[in-house]
Amino acid sequence: MESENNQSPIQELLSIISSEESFFAQPSIRDKITGLLKKLEDENQSLEEKAALADQKASKAISENEKLRNQIKELQEELQEKRQQVTNYHQQATQNNAKLEEMQKVLDGMEKVGNPIQLSIETHSLFDLNGDGWKIKCDDDKIMKKHTELGVVSASVLGDFDAGKSFLLNELGACFDSGYSKRTNAILISLPKTEGSYYALIDTPGSKEAIQIYNEELLKKLKNNLMDELTYDDTPKADDKNLVKSPEQIADDEAKLHQMRYRHLHNDRKIIDNLKEKFIIESADIIFIVVGKLSESESEMIQRNISYYEKIMNSNNTKKKN
Image 1 (cartoon, rainbow, N blue to C red):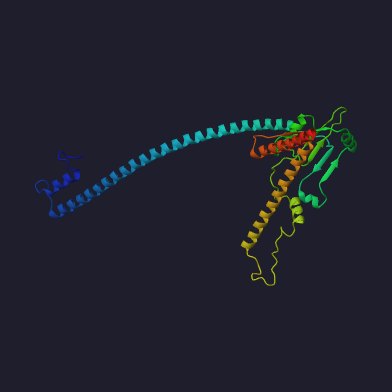
Image 2: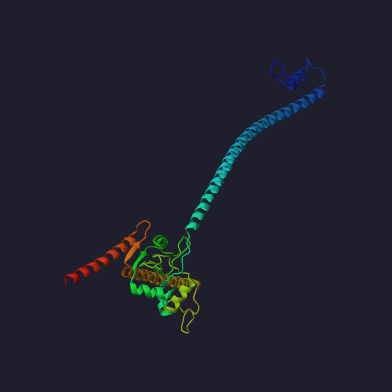
């Protein structure tokens, strides 16, 4: 306990001992007691400084602990929010999956397996003409002969792939394969089997289909038709300076070969589409051009049809006048 003059007990005791009037002792004993008290005072001061430093650390630790508690609380709230989001996403995914299953059922219901086709013309590639040719299949030659003699009104479709051409013809009375997983890979002609019916429906493969650059069968046909142009000889010649091609040269050759293949297959597809369109324009009495959103190429197709029929009409009018 401190005295009235704010001295510590040790300091007050030192004051008493240092006064000869207040404390009677031999000088050596007085000096020894004084030394011990000063040492004790120094140790006490050191302890007080350590205590003050410990208080500061404790205060800082309490502050850090409070900060960590707040951070943990925020993280817990954020985690709870994320869990709720995950729950919502899971519920939404479940609902979307249910909708997709319903759509799948609808699409499956729209799938249609057609009847055998009376006549089909497989115009896959120009390269087929250099081999077995285009395959023409006739399911019933009697019906074909009958309608060839009687004559029929033919209706056909043109348009890009997956536009719904087969579906439209089925709505008009045909029975072609139709649906999101079906693909028309030939010109298909459905002739009427009912007496008194005199119309034929013609389905066509879609235009602008992707170039099948990795189709092994198509690449084989391409190679057989363009052997010299589509191969490169990487066998070292006797007078070659570099007997072995570097990996970079080989990669460059393969890239050029790939580009050349694509160019030929693209031209082949374009010519086939043009031949198919010309065949339908010149053969069919009625043409339906099936589109989604009208594109520039589809507008050009419509214009080609109009131009063709204008020429026919002008030619017929000229004949009548003569």
